[in-house]
Length: 264
Image (cartoon, rainbow, N blue to C red; front, side, top):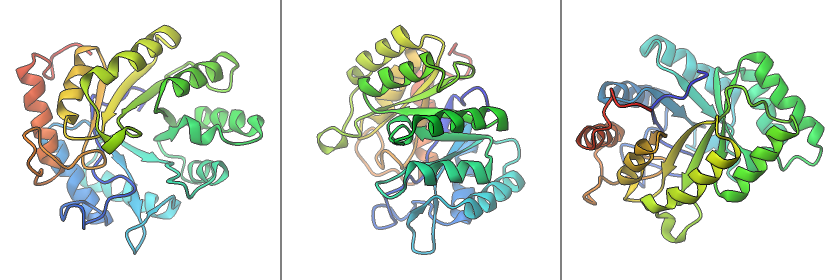
């Protein structure tokens, strides 16, 4: 998956549970069902977190292998991206180990987390491994410092500029985890200044998720949507499921002249 999907479904994330929403997919069959429904609604790919028997986010290569096999059977040809999200629990070494064992086609990696490794040689070797293994990395960036840090890593050869992909996260560290379309301006401009060839997408926390994603599309960006970041429709009512979030985004893009035929 050297090119990011235009609309990537993120159906569960690492922290929410069914107490937050009964339709949050936690088990592998539930994640597969959410992926199929999201695909039917217009999603082009899946960003996947797996959970253990207690519903906790885990970096478990065996569970990911099971999920990938089930998705390959139930949703053939649907791109799937796994995550190395640390959630304050996993070290850079454990994040690297997941990728090295699983060798997924695509993975998201928070740049600030993986670069916390004290030995920069290990980080450089890891990204070289990803390139050699054909594992496409999407670098997660939370702020302008992360953008500059990734640009520096590209400049010094730690990260290859080939097939460079990023996700700009809006609202993760704001009060109430809320984002607005104007929050796009600074990080997108910094990315264009420092890494103009990067393939980029955004995700947006909070009830203005759809609005933020449409604004990103107008700027040429791609979009990640789903319960990982927001459980509400644009009118403030709870979304019935992840497919409803995708359907609302697709309709909003069409209304804004940013439908599937729009340039990205």
